[in-house]
Amino acid sequence: MMESSAVSITKMVNPKKRKDLEEDRGGIDILSDSVLIHILSLMPIKDAARMVLFPRLRQLWTHVHTLSFDHCSYHYREDSTDAPECKEKFLNFVHQVIILHESSTLEKFHLNIKFNLHYSKWYNPKYECYAKEEKKIANEIETWLLFATRKNVKVLDINLQGCGLFEPDYNYKLPIIALTNKHLVELKLVCCDIEPKRNLHLSSLRKLSLTNALLNDRILDDLLVGCPLLEELSLISCHDFHKLNIANPNVKKVVVEITHFDKDQRLEIHCPKITSFYLSGCVNGLDLVNITSLVYADICFSLHQLRPSENYAEVLMKLGNLKAFATSDDCVLTLAVWNRLCGTFNWKCLELKVELCKWHLPGISSLLKNSVCLETLYLYIQPLSDNFFRYAKFIRWLQACDFDGENYWKLGKDNFRCLTYHLKTVNIYGCITKPYVIQLIEFLLKNAAVLEKMVIDSKKKLPHSVNKDITSDELLEMSRKILSFPRASSQAVVHLC
Image 1 (tube, rainbow, N blue to C red):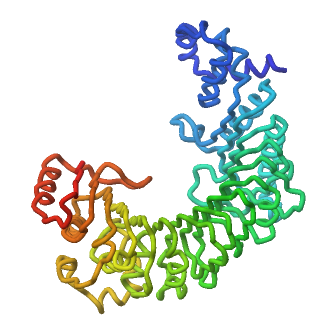
Image 2: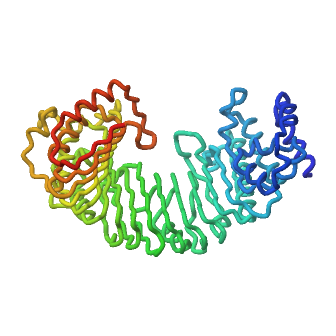
Image 3: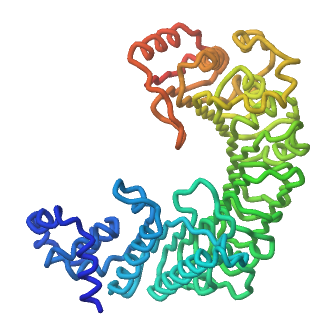
């Protein structure tokens, strides 16, 4: 059986490349088996399987400790499509690799394939063949998960959204065997649902990430109880949970992203041990019940409603004693538009990620004025996107309360305590040549009395942000402007790059 499978995989190699592979042996014969297995484990499994052409590697590739199967690499090929025969070819390849795999353990098992149980959820004789195909693939996936579990896999990464933009109508339900693995250290699931079970047991799990999963409070509780050593939890675009009650003493980082807007959506956070909390998306209400150990929070509400979140100011006040706080466009606009800010904050570090325009200025000013202990400021300036003003029709304030953005910082009479006594470091990244950025730099240099260092860097940016490269002439012109600005601190050094 193994010989026939090996022959079958060999046939998958492009005949034109076969001769080159056989001749280009290089110096692999001098390397040890363990080194070669490690190298093969870093390769895409399709390439590793081609090593059957090398006598030295013919058996070694079956001992790789990482298996990564990506269906998208099939239908993105010029000579292939996402047709049924393409999927069948992929299934056969996975099946053969699993049969041939000889290592007793696996470090990582990764699967990426677009899979939907659309036809299996309702009976219609017209589409029975499609339903059978879905059930066949579901059975194959369960077999692969059983294989990985029996190999004591440490990292399990299952993405059933594939390269599709939209999540499936009905998610695949993860078999219970995948949730009773005492060796699993990291679990990442996309478009996989988990049924509520009291016997979930992942005693070694440190990282858990769920994306596009149907959850409820009971499922979350069962998961958390079954993961006593959990350190990081990520819930991305998950549905139907309203409470996050984490008593696990080891959980330090929690990430929550809510993309499905519900005007009644409220999220209750009871996490006394976490130190880092990231929340983004469409949350109308956030109840911070117990966050006594929190050090850093990154809160990014989406502005999907005509009025501000009623408890936004309350949330900020509860986070006011953190060491560091980060936020982005919609939150800064909320402060500008609705003027909800009250009280003061004791943050030592503030991070703002904005597509800077004049409408952000009142919000930035409000944050600086009320961050009385601020020592370090990070500004990530992103390009102004075409749909930035997608909410402008909802914000009557934009028309009713217009102001002079070009002279905003010159006209202000506010007292900025942090600039007088505390702000020592400013880091500005991204689109640094924007006029409003230049004006803000001038304001900070003129008023930050104890400033020691200002870093202005066009190359450093946020992930997935596309910044236009600035020319040497633009950089020279900007440096001339900055050198002409008065400085309140004689110790201030500006690094421009």
